[in-house]
Length: 262
Image 1 (cartoon, rainbow, N blue to C red):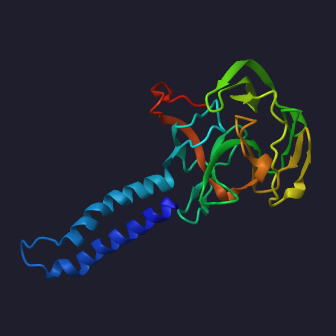
Image 2: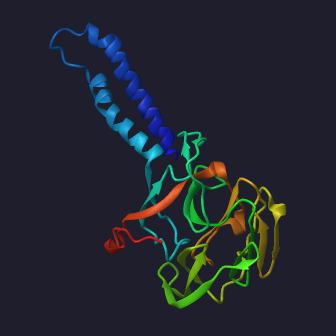
Image 3: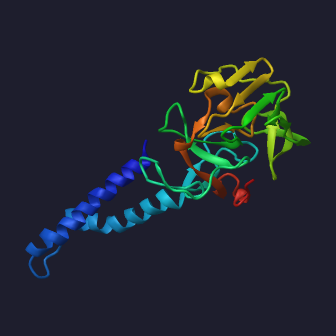
């Protein structure tokens, strides 16, 4: 469901009724005559819909975490806020950037439109920038020939799979975040698809090496062995970017998660 499109159509519809009333229908009503419901309701809803549309399109958008691919950073049921202008101001619906503000950095948690079905929003961590060479071998990550530092911090009981994984702190650039790795899981996801710029990647049983094409990003989940990400379906084009995730504002099952984010 394209909620932004639905909101835009509601905005246009209620706005058209409000404008028609001001220019035509209001002049035909007698003094003290009540507005008909089909004018009163749209006029009442129009400013509310306008405020929601502008807020959601240009400032922040709420997003609910639907899967465990970003455990331990984000859990299923987390409600987060997404900064819509961190990576540039974009026109709603068409998602075309009109004002440059910033660009994704390694380590950012980013929401984007799934390349295989742009009606779906996905959330992963930015691992590779345009032009980067990404290597993921033996469950270790290299960026441009340098191994990304990790340190083990103990076991992690995965609440989604009821299994024990090893938790690490990984450092991408100057940022640290936590990941989990299941040591007995295969080094590579089993079903790698055909995707644009597939020729930029080399796969083997231990992992892959990919050259990120211009205008694209390489994304991975923090739950490394339970994430369908760029290793499986390829690169995220710049025009698919939605925004930068930055805040957990609600989890009905775990109220203490308010504000916790890395």
